[in-house]
Amino acid sequence: MLLAIDRAGLVGADGPTHAGAFDLSFLRCIPNMLIATPSDEHECRCLLTTAFHHDGPSAVRYPRGSGPGAILSPELEAFPVGRGVLRRSGHDVALVVFGAPLGAALQVAEAIDASVADMRFVKPLDRNCCGNWRKATSAWSRSRKTS
Image (cartoon, rainbow, N blue to C red):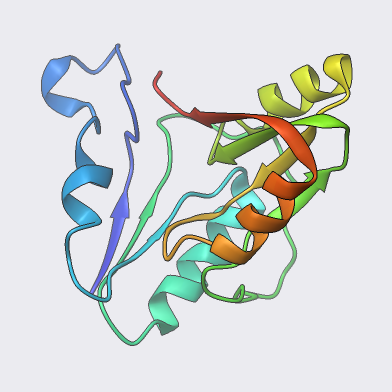
């Protein structure tokens, strides 16, 4: 089963009944559930492909509206399950991002010379990468799409 969840986070214009405010909380409780949070259109296609091939329940959550304009490849590439990506190496601070706030996190990271981790998956969480990034920094922040 694959759930493609649009309206991730608080979407405002659609009203209070169309906000994805609690989906991560209840989906994480489902055994063997895969939960992916793409940061752009390319990742959305790849994570939908990954979730489709997952042997178990899966959900891909993405925000309302258009993405940042990522270049799409013609192939439908599947990503390794539960693996995040270090988007920027910096010093002392790491910003851990799930989904669409990646662009804003990269701008902030540029200004304060921070590392940025695009986690891609809420479940399973990439604990190995978190451990490596945590050792290299002295402060952590996490970001999640809320509007």
